[in-house]
Amino acid sequence: MFRAKITAIGCYSPPRVLTNHDLEKLVNTNDQWIQDRTGIRERHIAEPDVATSDMAVEAARITLQQRGISADELNALIVCTVTPDMLFPSTACLVQDRIGAKGAWGFDLVAACSGFIYGLTTAAHLVSCGSHKKVLVIGADTMSRILDYTDRATCILFGDGAGAMLVERAEEGETGFIDFLNEIDGSGGDYLKQPAGGSRMPASHDTVDRKQHFVKQDGQQVFKYAVRKMYETSRDLLERNNLTAKDIAMLIPHQANKRIIMAAAERLGLSCDQVMINIDRYGNTTAATIPLATRDAVEAGRLKKGDLVVFAAVGAGYTVGANLWRWTM
Ligand code: UT7
Image 1: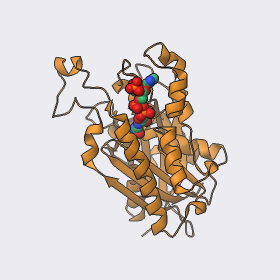
Image 2 (image 1 turned 120 degrees about the horizontal axis):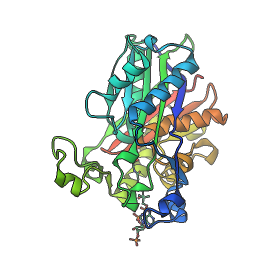
Image 3 (image 1 turned 135 degrees about the horizontal axis):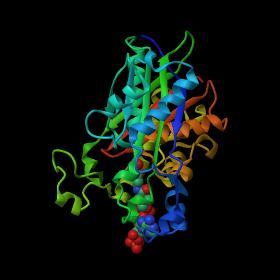
Image 4 (image 1 turned 45 degrees about the vertical axis):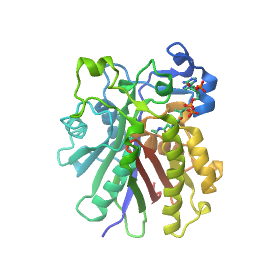
């Protein structure tokens, strides 16, 4: 068995910014409501000719450049997304070709907001069993393509973006990946979904007319579940590693709602400076929130080499995930 560590991180946000004030012109909402209820001020939105693979490629290139390696050194790449360019070929195949990762296999991982954490868990295991040396995990979502910009309850929440982390074999004496606690609970499937476009409800005039290709959410149900499970999984993960809140430098949570994050953090007994929040500038970018928040934490000097960090997320499915790492870069 080997240990796995994260050696590079790179993110991409499309340049166009959609502010709360811009949204006031589209739906009956206001900046104050959005900030108070979600913590979001603005989000980035991809131009019409930009798809998920385009953002994923940018994030991958930045990550590889930071590490100073070429794409053909990758053994595998995992693209976590619920907004692939198309259902097949996978976005992983499109990215593999564009970046020239000739020696890599890969796949798309569909776990909505927990996607990146499941990707990290998978990559860590591929590396630790010894079969892989370098695995690139990318979280990328173009949520603006599946939002109904006449539905104020959902269109204000999400943004577009991509982020990647390179997972590699750790050196002697380094820790890196420590533990994970991931769960799915399909009984919550109805509360957050994109109903049409699959084999259950293939695309038709009717599905388009009834807006079934857009995100549908029962916000309050998801909210309550997210607070409880983000708290419980993080707590259980710490407890079984004989750790308490004061031992960790940072919780880097999925950025769905500032109130969810604060409620979970409070129950865990974390102080504000132990919790990363950047939802104000990006909104909920689904699989990209964890790398975007981690990149910002590192750049702000809030996450440093040797720190213990917990990544935690809850998302559609339901999917729930928490990872414990010792930060190594
Ligand atoms: O990452 C995927 C997981 N997703 C989540 O974690 C999202 C979880 N849910 C949430 O974040 C919150 O439930 C929302 C932000 C979606 C909604 O916040 P809320 O505090 O649960 O509001 P609510 O749904 O209870 O609505 C309160 C009021 C309603 O009006 P009435 O019925 O009280 O008159 C809504 O119609 O706010 C109204 N409302 C809005 N008002 C202004 C809903 N959306 C808006 C809006 N602007 N955009």
